[in-house]
Image (cartoon, rainbow, N blue to C red; front, side, top):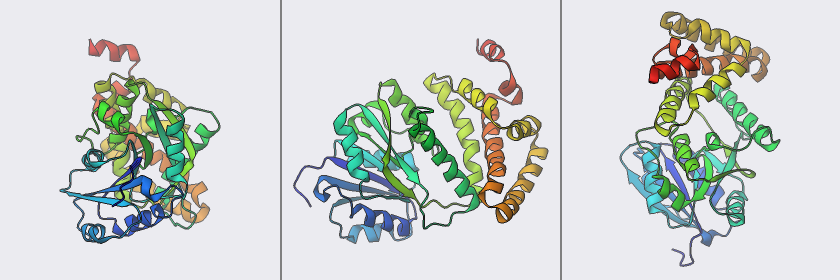
Length: 333
């Protein structure tokens, strides 16, 4: 155990991903930042794949703190990690994001320039990975956001607070109240809205790169946008942020196919189920014939249909989603 003061704590929640976690730890051992100036806090969220046995015996050049908890979700795991962290800065890293050698140093450098900021690193597609088509689509959309922030099309905001590779002062997390453990998806964005109210600065750091070895089933991928849609309305309601206005503005900018599908299928469960049964097969066929260029519009349509269905369900139906803002305001009064 190192006696020198730790300046940054890397908090990694994990659940049954030992092989990927080992790869992350190996990359952390090769950071250009001094090993005696950071620690790694791993929180196993009920893993049953040997994660505990490995971490308890692992020999690392940095201080490794392992915590085991019953499965309670990533928000609870990150809160446990923050509570145990000794560093002034907390860097949240996912167990499938392999850091480039300068990742920690870049995060620290930006915090040394100015306090009261949130540093948003990147989660890039690994050059040596073969991703499922739907995961490749998700990565492409993420990298599209990175290009937009790099080119100045839009600034970094709370909506880019992805805890796969993000850092901020530990005291800021505590001052905001930590992660809300009610939410198992988009819990990072919910915290970001509360951080935004504290007046933090969100900074995009393209040089703080991690490689995202993402993989999940299509069923898991399909469940995500619906939950995001519902949660966006919940967050807006609870945080008194006009997320509905933002959602509608985004919808108006979607391509014609997506807007047509949402208009036709929203709140029509049989037709929607039929479309969602057919479109994944079309996407796979398009991917085989044309690659990502062919499948990307179809996966976008699937994702957005499920997202806007979540929004509409949380609002109370398609009529509320498509209603003029004046009608929504009147209904609240």
